Length: 196
Image (tube, rainbow, N blue to C red; front, side, top):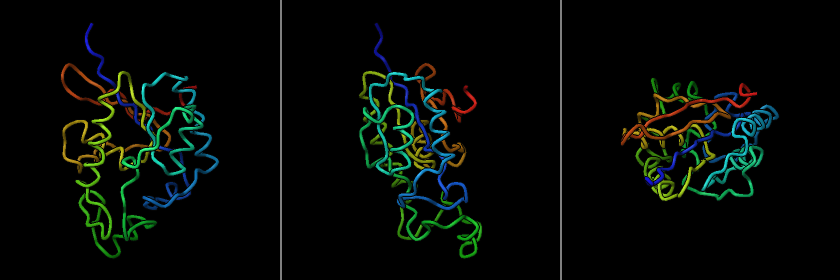
């Protein structure tokens, strides 16, 4: 029998007030909105209590609550490496507000004063991936948009900045898996609300 190669199921937390207004929400612990909780409930239907060997979550309440509502709170282990990108001085600002100071700015090519670089985020993501690859079965990660996009780029063997190519909606599921020996994206932006 061939060795099992674990798939990584990545889940972005539900809506928050800041995600709805486009504010960069890194380390600020912003709770889910009512809509965010509703969409997290949709994830529980989409996942249908699927068994995972490992459930890892960011320590921030928006990820923890999404994990709990989706039905995996009791199995979850908090992992600091799944914290969202540290936006430093740009925490809480929208891209438009930042571009008033730095025209054409994006988080992907910075700078992010007093925050993280894409490579620093990727170092954390590599640790999460290495840990997940040691699992005996599939792994689910509950975290945040930008860190999960960097994790996906890292999974694919791309530079962390390639995360700009894989937009990830709130309260959606992506599956990182394999085609032959290659790491690939198996599914992306699966929405539990539409899965009813």
